Length: 187
Image (cartoon, rainbow, N blue to C red):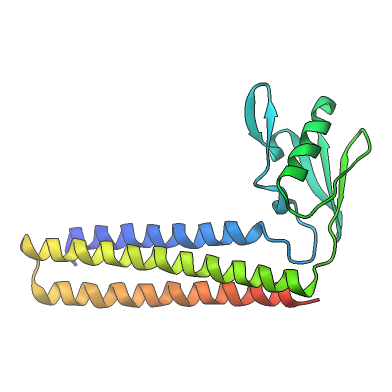
């Protein structure tokens, strides 16, 4: 296989892996009925004049399947952290006892579960669009290579290989989404 073609495949593979990683990161933030420190991963706290991720100013963990505990390293940040959790609009009511923040994760209602499934479907579509864009960029690169001397047979073989790779990743996305939907809808 031509070196340029091989390099395009590596670029494509990296792009596809990044799309899947982004999808998984977004899905980790979802609340699917049990407490997870990842639910607070998008929260930043004002610390010494800079926005700092919550997990860099506090220990974030779970006590049990329904409770998240945030233990700040600097007790003066406890009020700020509590306000940021409330501002994040995650549906939590943090309890500040002066030492740590305890968050009871309420069970999901049927309506909220359906909303989460819609969100998951939306994330699935965004990921598929990203993958289709990567495919288009790769195929455009092959057309350009053809103009620069790549044989038509080699271009066609490369295009077929690209489509096989895309199909493989679409299948991965659908499996991830199916598992997440099942997790969300399980009471």
